[in-house]
Length: 332
Image 1 (spheres, one colour):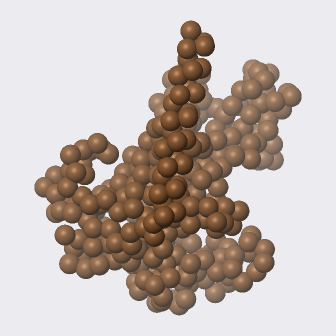
Image 2 (cartoon, rainbow, N blue to C red):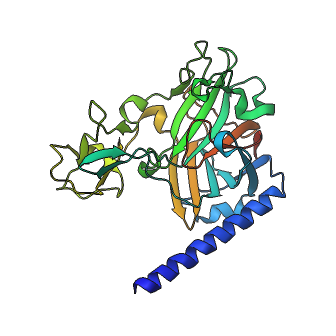
Image 3 (cartoon, rainbow, N blue to C red):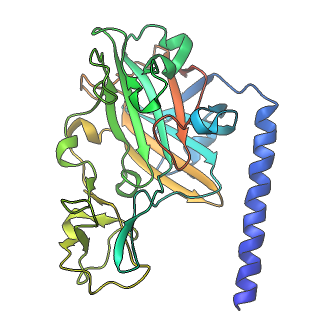
C-alpha cells in the first residue's frame, strides 16, 4: 500500500513539474498581455469553477523576478467579471511548493524554535488618487530604493495629493479566513520603511495577531484541546488557550505563529477571497464592491479604465517578488 501511494505521489509531482516547466517555457517566448477585460455578467460567480468565468477573456501576464529571484519569471493567468454592484478577479499561477509555514513554531530539543519559512502572497495595486508615472511605470514608483541596504527601502507616493490602493493576499494570515488585506500607500517624508504603507480602517482589531511570549522565545497560545480546529492548520483567537509550561509537548510538535480572527470589520474587510492550492497551482478568487464608499479604496466606474500592477511572492516577502509590467483594467 505504501509503495502504491509513493508511486502515485511521484506521478502527480512529475506531472505538476512538467506543466510548470512548459508554462515557464511558453511565458519566456511571450511578452504577455497588458490589458485585462472585465466582462459584465448577470450573477456573481460562487467560486473558480462557476460558469460566469467562461464569458471572461483570459489575460496571460508575465511576472518578472526582483531581489533574490531576479531573472526568474512566473506566468500568471487572470480573468475578471462584474455585476451591477461587484467586481470579481480570478488569479492562477504555478507554485510548486505550497508555503504555509510562516514563522511557525516547532518543538525541538526540548525547546521552541521559530522556522525561517515565509508564505505565498499576491499583491495588487491601484490608484485611489492619481499617482505620478504609475500608469507607465507601475508599482516601482511606490517602492524607493535609495539605500544599498534593502531593509531601508521605503514605500511612498511622490506627494501628499497621491494615494494608492494596496490589496495584499497572504496564504497564512488572510486566506484561511477568506479575506485579502486591504491597505493603501501615501506620501512618506520620513522615509521609514513602513511609514507610507497603511492598513484600512478595522485592521487594528481583526488582522492576524503574533502568537509569541513577551520574550519572543516561543508561542504563547495553542489550540484548545477541548475544541476541534475550525480551520485545520490555523489557530483562531476564539479557540486559543494560553500555554502553561512545555512538559505536554513532544519532539516535532508545531504551533502556528499567528492567531486569526474569522470575521474582519470595516474597510479592511472589503475584499472577500477564496484561495486554493492544488496540483502545484494557486487559484485565488477575489471579490469586492465596485464602489465601497471608503476613501481608502479605489472606486470603480465601469466607464473608465484603471492602471494597476501585480506582484507575486513565492515563500517570500519584502523585495523578493515577481512583478508585472504596468497593466490596465477595462470594462465591457
